Structure formats: C-alpha cells, structure tokens
Length: 102
Image 1 (tube, rainbow, N blue to C red):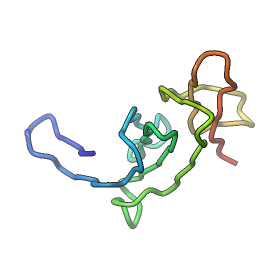
Image 2: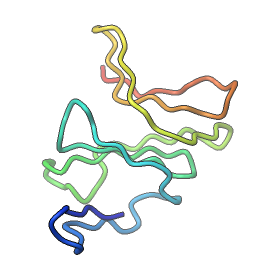
Image 3: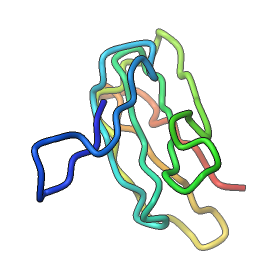
C-alpha cells in the first residue's frame, strides 16, 4: 500500500505487509484528515493515523471473521450519541458490522 502526492509519481510513504490479505478498499476519515481505513479481502479493517507516533503501524485492527464477506467500506451518519467510525457493507442479506467510537 502506498500514499502518493498529485505532484509526483514517487510514493510519499509505503506500507508493506500491513494487512493479512489483499486490499479491497481504502477510505480517508471524514472526521480526522490524517486518518484512513484499509479493508482487506480477509475481512480485516486496519486504521492508520499519519500523525500518530508510529504512522507505519495500524492504530486499530478489527477482524470480522470468515463468515462475513465484506466487499466495500463506506462511512455512515448516525445519531449524535452513536458516532460510528466506519460501517461495512457485506454481501446482501447479512447484518452490517460497524466499528463505533465510544
């Protein structure tokens, strides 16, 4: 996985081997511009923060198991007292798992 600038073809930063599977989706956090989320094909979500003391390591990792097959990652708005960090869209008919900020 790599981060690129629009002004250069060289990667600004690289993350090698940070997920157990193939990367399926990457989304920037709408609430924290330095944070982004990576979803892999093994249903593992990794959160990274470029401003953390260790930006090359995930700040949070959540594995959803093998039963779910999560295919995309989108952000959802909810009630003010329940602010999810991310919501996942699994295969049709399955419950949508979420990571919530508590």
